[in-house]
Amino acid sequence: MSRENASSTQRIAACLVGLFFMIACTAPERGPTVGRPPGRRVSRVQPDPTRGIPHQMDRDEVRAFLNNTKLRRLDLIDVSMTHAIWTINETLRKQLSDAPRPKIILSKRDGHYTGCINIRELQLHDVPVGIALKYLCEATKCEYWIHNGTVVVGGYRPIEMNTYMRFLNQTRIRKLEILDANVMEAVDALRAAAEEVDFDGRKPSICMPRTNELQAAIAKGDLGHRVSGVNMRNVTIGDALREICKQAGADYHFFEGEIDI
Image (tube, rainbow, N blue to C red; front, side):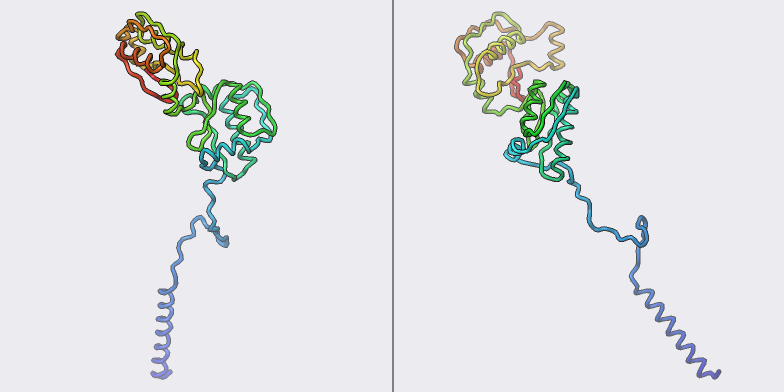
């Protein structure tokens, strides 16, 4: 081979090497395929995280749901309230699939004992959810109400402020007589008098919360100032309550359906 032919061959070889190098540098980099089986196409459709989960509804929508949506079958025999609520939710999930529905839960405040209430037997067929809940609550002496788009089952229900005001300022008791009593005895007398009057709506409960301080005071027999004497006729519950608090050196506030002294 002549020198000219050898030199030409070397130049061609160098060009080919350079071409392959350029192709290698400009090719897109492929990442690792960890967890991706070869030959299988990866779906870009992500699962819906709300599938099967109750949707947020406003109060009117919840009421319409309770009145218009029927449970095809509900059989509760010797089960707890917790199990009954779970059964209703599960039945609705199967019936409605992904359709909007409210959550039905136990009250956070008294759910620990409401959930343990036993339902001996309740069998319903093709009834609205609201009627099923009504029968369930009647059988267990509970109530249900709507709160923030959720149906809550428990032993109490929230009371609006205007209901407190009507109860205190417009509801009258015929007679209240208290003579030299401690504050707990006075509150018991007022509560008994209030239970005898008619009231349009759910009455707030008048009570003294059993706090640690109150329990200690009861144990010592020291409940502070005594109510020396209350003798009232045709008086509003609010006026009677304020007189008791004045003599006992106490105060009252509203809390979740109660008037706490």
